[in-house]
Length: 364
Image (cartoon, rainbow, N blue to C red; front, side, top):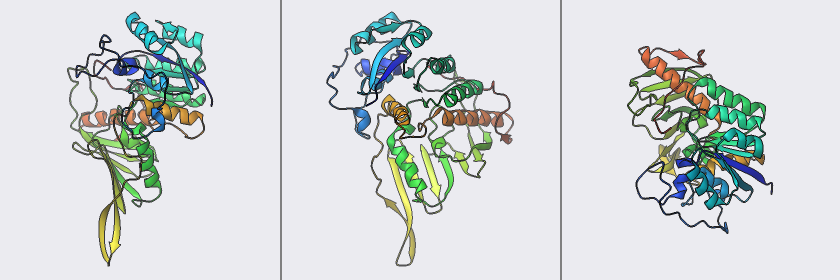
């Protein structure tokens, strides 16, 4: 088994605190004073090997510690209290307040970037420069198209798998859905529907084969008090191979409509699959049993990291929530905002102005 040295940048909520503190229903991103659950030092159960089982760790630190093929050796954070908690929980001796110093001195194989969005692109490119073999980040990927471009380019040129966010798409059940789609289980794919473009949680982009070509959008809102100006309206995107993606308020997580059936993912019912069939000359649509694994939350950093590791093992071409796919979704979301601001006019892709982007909630 290959052994990899790993580090984490940022020991906030998704970096470490989510699994460090007991769940009390009080979501305080700075609280590390709650009782700490016991750490199973024997690692008898490795969560990444049991897709669909409950009880997954969520934080990126816990996801890396959970794998026997990874040595979690260091962390960087400006908060000394968090660094001390990291050392006590994981036994790592590499504690840094400067992320660049850590990357240059430790020269890690696996890098988790769980900072806020600002400077995430710079840290990703720096990790590649320092020899990282795999990178997984917190969501959202970046603020601007230019930042996303740099991240994707740097990783592609160095052949470094990049996964950008521990979202539902990283769950192995999404790979099963794509297998069904490619096998012809619902015939030819004619359209995709999702509740929104959301470059933070873009389930729909995983199922694209072509490149986004143009969009129309309407109903966007002004920037909210929380800081976010993410697209809140509705719209449509068409790819260069003619596939139509609808963004509709009230839609499920993703709906894949084909000529002979339909596959639907929702957060309340997980995956469901219908297939057209004929019985006694009567045509009808019947629900088929979903092949394992079925989606079961939570779906934290375990699966985002698993995709990176599968890429390094040659078992996967790119992470399901790859930087390339997230960057494409970011551009679609920005273009939908542009269209809505122009009264629903068609906006062609790619966008020429790469300085365009999105603002996010203050805690992002």
